[in-house]
Image 1 (cartoon, rainbow, N blue to C red):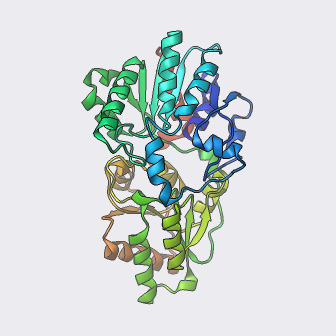
Image 2: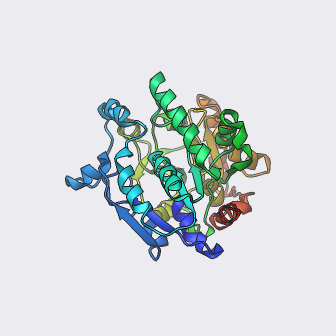
Image 3: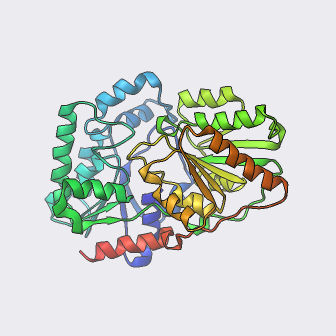
Length: 385
């Protein structure tokens, strides 16, 4: 989403993107409509011998990660499992005419490619951290040797960069702590929202709670589901009057857990426009975090753009956009992950207002975080070079 929106709006600021990516892959979340936003741009799709591409070539189209595959994924995760794309991307990059290199990661193999092309061409390199690298929360580096290697690699690559863009203040703080000399060249550009994606939709008759995003270990829905289950068992909310929607990819372990609870509808991964429409057709939004230090919910501005009241189940440094918005008056509440009584009480309070015909609606305080305005900020950083 982030690079697609940057590419969509950069031409408005007199910058023409040329996109280098891989050919089709097998993956758990595919959105064939998203490419329509950049369909008129030059895109170079290279070959790759990474696992997802090989699975595609073998005939697989949709891939669901299995729990037993985790040790294999960890073994391939050095520096990450897209390493076998590097030579193809490099060969494509050095053959085209360009002025700047903008690289977004993960996958962090992209950073390696960008650094190699920058050294070969002497063109300015802009790195975009959508997640922390050494502290990457989803497939972490386990051994001391791996961490040392990645630490040295990160140091070399950020040293080549002319500008570094990060999605969150926490990543900037981490980088400045490690590389204080780079502080003046590190800038925060958060994930934003595109007002064009949000349209008025009719609300369903049943009280509806929606979750938007991936469900995995650091987004375990257990405490939220327990709160809902207790509300039903205590007959505070009758099951026919309640809808719970999970919109997004769900890992198998949590998929079974949600199915076994018999409380929620599972929509899975939807095309982005359809997912936003389904999300907005609700009365309450819920976001879940178990408190990982480097977990930054990428959908915070989209949650706020929906106008829905928001309950956050869990605290982490990465939800400070929410916390600041709630302090400014947006209807939202943050609970400890295990505070089932607090979560339950707030859900019932909002349900009770809904029954009485009282609508709770918010307005995002972050008007400056539209995708177009954030792209303008990126364009200004590029033009400074």
